[in-house]
Length: 369
Image (tube, rainbow, N blue to C red):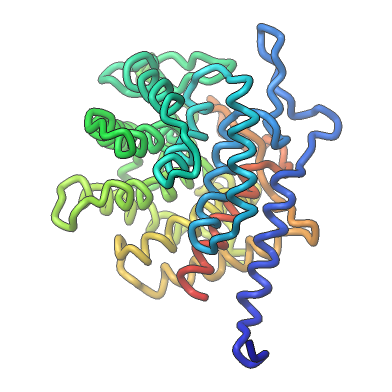
């Protein structure tokens, strides 16, 4: 190929994406600061690559999307090896550990591997055994906390999307209908009608939003999940749920445009609190979701949306080190009763930070380059 035909921006972006992947699979918790010790003595490494938690599920999803768009075989090989190693030992079923099955369902569908028995077992658990709140919401149970009667915005990404995809792959329409119901129920209790942004959590036990925090990364799961859900289900343009989800997404994106930091292009960890620190993983999730919403024509191609993503892309790439580590990433975050506690969450490289940046840059590669 002639040097004149090479797109230097695309070459540089692909190089940066591959550095993100290299860092994703080589992150280590050097001083054991971010290990999760359970009551039964098990230790979950939420930071390193060789364990099973939502952090790894998001990592796998980023690799999947990169492989789909570029055909990069190494990204696929990393995912297949992760599943082969993890299925040998298994893990406890909860909202967060369900997240890898979104990628597993895509790989099974593409006949890259046979995960049928695993998909069946986990989806049946999510459908019939996962604890429910009032009105049938999926209770956000994790390794360490029951979170009685609580709805979190994370759940739509971690469990509902995988359940819907498995429903499509295994031809179980009841899973898909349950996934639709969960989206509507979570919108009912977590979307803020004043700002369009989302609260981190809701509890039926006392009926409140805890700190009423509009937490950035929790919001980014919504920006990611709604376009992916609409695309996954191939909802027609006149479908009532599609139109409802599109309106919900646009209201959120409008709120994001209003709260973006003008100087850096990033968003604050509490979206409407400029005194909270700027956070890059949520920013990457917003970029992926907004770009995909533009590409799928879920929102109009208005200059303010395009400008917001371009500013955010610069903010993300400027926070990726030469070794491929996305900086300014907040550690895993529970629902707090005091908004000040969100500001105290430590910043550290994490698999989901790497992967959200991977998703954002891959979608940018597809949409603009």
